[in-house]
Image 1 (cartoon, rainbow, N blue to C red):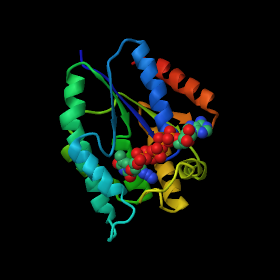
Image 2: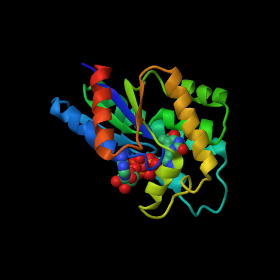
Image 3: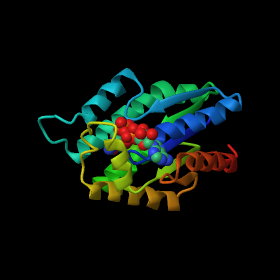
Image 4: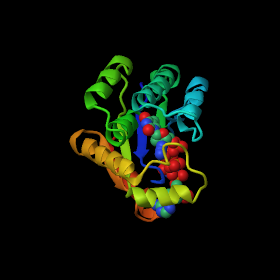
Length: 206
Ligand code: Z5A
């Protein structure tokens, strides 16, 4: 039987790392074999693209379209070499970000046209889509404060608050109009976030 593809999404500092541990424990308690991925990254080449795209001291501006293409280059490597073979072998994928991140960050934050992003998605993604997405929703000011407490900010984290507000708005707009995306209030105390994640997974009947 084919495995399932679960994605965790959210702004920085929303608590994705913690959510992944919660979802992983829930899946393992059901005896499921889980592979965790992250984007950008997850293969040797994709990890190099991740380093490039996050690098804070690049000597030139990265054009929004370049950033978008780097995200999809990384994503296709991960899909073809890790995600699709694992799903076909019956393993479950638990992903720290996927396609929705590009739609929110590059579409919302960078204000690239949906038509451009959809054309790239259609051209390169193939048939594989997440079975369920948990979007951790947080006010960007709170998320960035949590992220800043961890240390130096990367290139994207150094963007203005308005960038993250547009990104959040795009996440919420897509979550309100497309099926298979649960919105979790990530500003709650950790125990409540964890309970909300488990409730959403139970309701999703995967
Ligand atoms: N990006 C993009 O633009 N387009 C794309 O297509 C893709 C990505 C795929 C990836 O960086 C960057 O690439 C990201 C989006 C962009 N850029 N930005 N900005 P990353 O993977 O390194 O960064 P991230 O995904 O944003 O992860 P993060 O900063 O590590 O966030 P997190 O995993 O959600 O945070 P966390 O480590 O789980 O939690 C942060 C802190 O908050 C930590 O100290 C926790 O203990 C604390 N925390 C968590 N939950 C709570 C609650 N409920 N209460 C209190 N404190 C909490």
